[in-house]
Length: 582
Image (cartoon, rainbow, N blue to C red; front, side, top):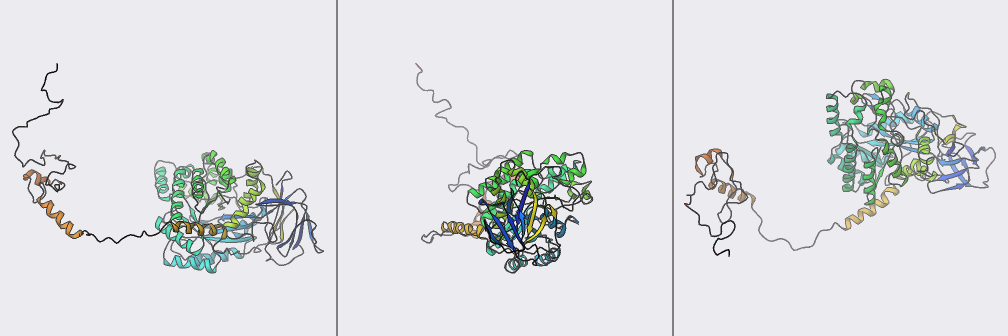
């Protein structure tokens, strides 16, 4: 991305049928990886990068792309999408064809979608269903995360099968959407412990769903039914609290945690603090949160305001700057989109009640160009940081690196035009640099001089192995360090008396019967009638001085004792008066 407003990407996987365009030489550009920039040519054959350097020797019949003045970057990886997802009684508008088509147009060459298994159903059944939906439609490569809507032995067994046999290495827990996805803390701990054992990455949607539900009910009762109510019902404090709680539970399980769609700067700070303490955790801001804010919820056009409804909601305008700073310093790790689009007639399900507006916004096509414009063009990120945030870090976290996320002998492709199956775009009107001139996916030219040329079903499912080194190498060392400090203390066995709780209870009952004021005991008819409770006497038989003697009847603890006729005072208040003042 430069003044020429062009970027190029390359994809490495050799899985497509050979064609006349399967041998490509990208010549005269600058190769950008997360760790450096070099002037180099890139030769691709059979979907794999064969050579990177200068003065390359290539066979005849090669398509040469003149990349002079351009940047050659690894293709974008969007780690957070929801294609044709069943949600709130409908399905997201983009299926795996239109969604991945848009992704390629924007320079994203791989998405990682979520298997949204309803509560009570089988994770395996829904995994198979998503594979069937996606395999015949995807234009680019894809992977899958799996949402865990409940906990039990069957869930644990299916998680193990998915990791060991199906190429899944991440599972998502929800702290919101009660009776749909929400897990209680102990259930979430069980999922995190299972992830740790299996070598998977735990993910979390961090919002306090129960309090949000109560707030939403109150807002509707108060007559607030428009899209602004969505924002009011999900204040930043609910995201901060849930993020902090999820981090604590993950730390207890010694499980790596990936917090999706971080929309609150304070929630981002919580992740940053945990990382500084050594916890293995990652935060994912999304394009919408980095480029938009909550002022849209106050728009007088209902369609415009509802078009920005997602969860957690967009925040105060100052939040974007703080999230960008954390992304630039590495406190937040990856960028996604939470791409889950609904058309206006679908959003209109909530025209009379914001609680029924399907949650979700666009972004899979726009992420790369919007982040370049807001990040690199403003000087917040350099091109290497951009590559890390949009591609390399996701590849590392989900164990795709260096197969994905790097221009080396075997890599991927990037950039942006406009082809999404949605009639509302939250980035509409934003001027962006870094438009894709060429995009190469699987060795095939899919964007050629800004012209989109995709094939339905040309993408493939990419398994994500367990125990990603980027995550688990540090986690295992940290676990060993923590365990070293958790040892049993060698001491002599206790051989003293042990209280007999049953005998102690019987003794207390006997004392209570003898206590003045107790039912069946002494203390006079008034005290007995009131059945006033008193602590038992001290060991010496005296009154317990911490016990109140107040009674509504006026009865006192010592009413049964004879009154004294007088008290002789030797030292009255103020001291004795004996002796002369002069």
